[in-house]
Image (cartoon, rainbow, N blue to C red; front, side, top):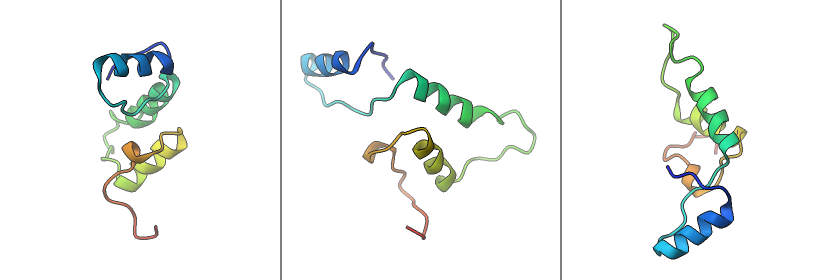
Length: 77
């Protein structure tokens, strides 16, 4: 993970390095993801999130697009 001050800075860096731009998300979205992903991690009843739960979390905080689509999707889709 790399941190940049703006998406324009990301674009310039990728152009200079001659690499494709990957997924970009804001610091706020990263913080929301960390809070939601780890908030119950120390609970003795903790269990790993299902694929559908993780996908729902990504979508809830606006992480969409091909990069954020998980391999296994629910049958209802």
